[in-house]
Length: 110
Length: 117
Image (cartoon, rainbow over the protein chains, first blue to last red):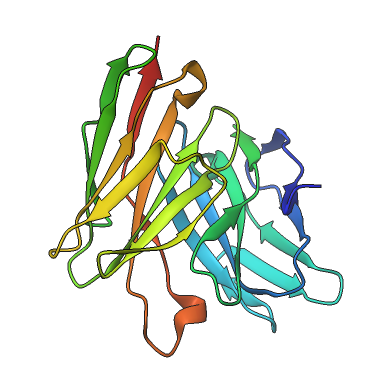
């Protein structure tokens, strides 16, 4: 079983749609959680950290459920520029390495 | 931009050769992590250097080795290249060792795309 699992997609949505991505992680000792965005053939860039209480950054909302070991990302009012691969990332307590999911690809269409 | 630079951007090698990839970390950062990203996959952790010492290693063979220099820049060396080593190699820098280590953010360079023929 992979340490971090994501639906690979692709998710094809029209502009203005709301789309949600889910992610599960296997290590209950995981301490920190992030969503990174990766454009085609580019490096991953931090989209947002994910906090236990849930957090929002503009059109993006992240949620964490520690009991279910589940992380989500909600994108409202999708823009063409949101088209990218979204990587779910965890960091275990005591380790400094990041563990990445395989990514979920989003394609926003006009 | 993240301030993390990697060189070269692209590289073509043949099986059995050796390669050195370089990374300059963001100013003020003391830690460099290296990742390998195969096509269609998420990045996989190779190893990390903190204050010039290896500080954790992923599931990669010893022919993957590295260095960190006093200015915190870093090198990744791969010996006896195999076809499966073809991938995007990413370097990430961060500031570790502070109290809020659980939330230390890693910033990635643009990567080196290695092709092994």
